[in-house]
Length: 66
Image (cartoon, rainbow, N blue to C red; front, side, top):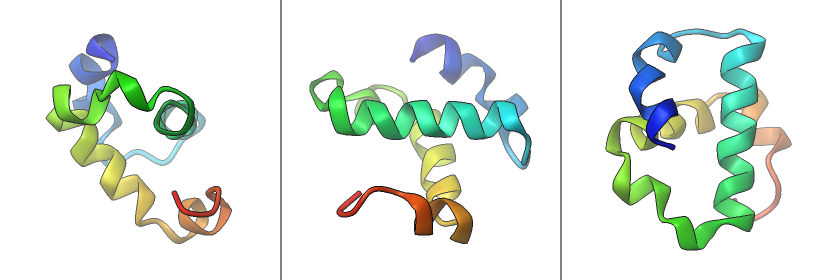
């Protein structure tokens, strides 16, 4: 998570496969690695992810109760 937090500024405002891949990985981490508490420890990454989660395409394809 630390490495992603360091490059989050490069992902902001981007809609490419790299950004989508990171978002999918973080969504999976929320589901399977909740004990990591990455959102608490990496506020910039959390803010970016919250923005991505608002995109219609991401929201409509997320797992239920995400």
